[in-house]
Image (cartoon, rainbow, N blue to C red):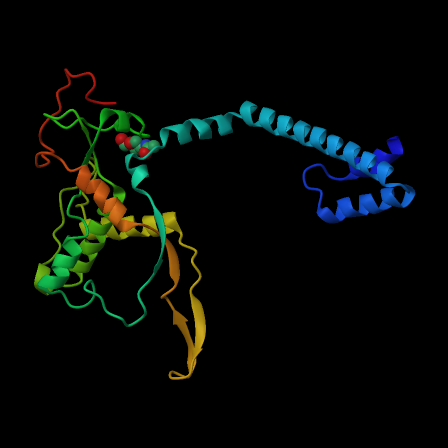
Length: 268
Ligand SMILES: *[C@@H]1O[C@H](CO)[C@@H](O)[C@H](O)[C@H]1NC(C)=O
């Protein structure tokens, strides 16, 4: 009996490949001559495999719950429930072909301005107390409203890209003016364009889109040509804009209105 089981025990419990199992079966079957004996052996093998997997699961589960860093991770995951989570849907989208111009391209006109501005008509949103309490951070309650203020980062990113675009055309948009220093102990004026370039950099790296672009021989150009019109897995944009439209502030945003500190629910 022990001999029957010995090949299985020598197999690494984490990942025994099909090849290993086949080999074990061959070895064992060469000494078994009847179908009955074969199926009985198989049954014992199944039971042992089941017990082994049960043991492995228990060990992994125990190490998982006793590991403080994994506990922290789970705690964090539970909190990380972005309010617009329900608006996230995925779809495949083909990016623009090199050289094909859209309404977002080219020297600025009233039409390009309109196209860019319409990408983020609603920059600031309001969420319920229940939604706000599931976020990873607290946010202010909107004065005169029982909702809380947030903005989805994608709209900040779009605003930033548009700002960089405008900086390229000072003749039309004027010079980008520097603002007041952000940090109290530093005199460096706030450079909005510089801030925006960095935000875009952080987002590109954060999302690290690994969609492969291909290089194909072009008979016309007589060279290998890169193609950027690849199909990407994207978030459905209409669904996101629908969400922000449904979560618009009831009154214009006024950052100078101090939230009442008497209201203990002001912060979550
Ligand atoms: C929460 O907000 C603070 C700024 O007050 C920020 O430094 C921190 O990274 C935020 N935490 C999370 C989880 O977003």
